[in-house]
Length: 416
Image 1: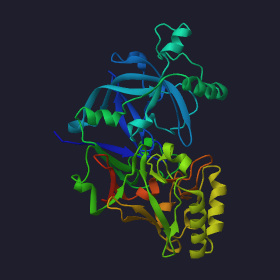
Image 2: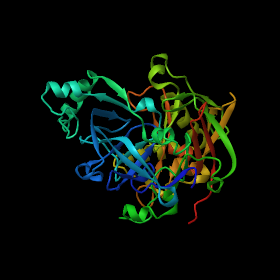
Image 3: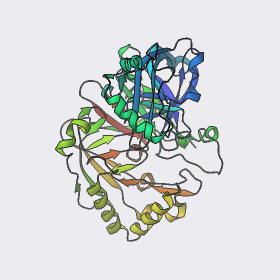
Image 4: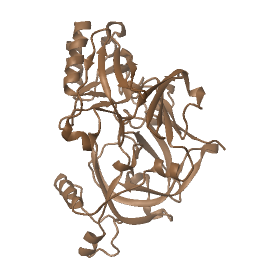
């Protein structure tokens, strides 16, 4: 039996993130879950999990309300079996916690939910047993769901309701697989690109999933030993905190221009956010800290005079989730972007993003290209989110053993 679990992944469902299929409950109901290193909770939509037919399901008195950079949801925490992998890689965890969405405020595209791959501290829930008992709910369990969170006002109030209840930390699925001795405390991802490649209008998710450029691999418990998945040398980035995959971004440079220093996280945000950058596979874009974003755009303009106008045109089109025509982007006119990150030795590791990775052709719509740099999100701390463009074309090992490290190498090319 292999010592790791290999699972095929695809951009076809989430459109701007990879997903993998798991099986839930006694019936092994399949669910395509978005793979997110920026969160830790496992959550599914009701259509993907018929809880009433699951003979292994055990309700709890726990509820979750999770908010991401974009999108949020609320629902009960349940316990049941979860199966991952296929064939000789197939493994079943008899007891795992996951939530079932009971609100409208979420956006997983065509995915059935989300699988968080970050650390335990982010998988938080609240014990509402005393609240339910006071309201006459007997037994005091969150399934069937006893709260009204559908409209925005009630959803906002529910946040305050939960804050008044005891908080607990759950065991995320990947942590459970490691602690049960099923896999080692590391995983790897083959990442081809950051947005789904579409070459014909109206392609179904199933057809999109057959495109080799939309496919990747998730290796639970594996890394360097899976040498058929990568080529060339490994480059290491230090993980400086075990909450998100926190790292220290030292500087960014545009082509051969002077380096742009990246500011540290503000002191008031250190307890909650830990560092000035995170590696987030649930993010389709490179979301640059505000001052860095402005400096990078200035650098692009110095390199290519037409860059500001093209970026402005794209952002206008992006309001309707469309991009520019493919021929608006000429790869030869745009510079590489270099991200200088702290290495485990205290030196720097530089990861270079090719123009074709921060301008994605045939992205989401056939014949359209998308610009993959964004400015720091509103109400977000002074932190850069290193999303899929940084990882595109790479084999990425998230090694959580001891002092955490992210190792990257060039992925073995996709066969057309």
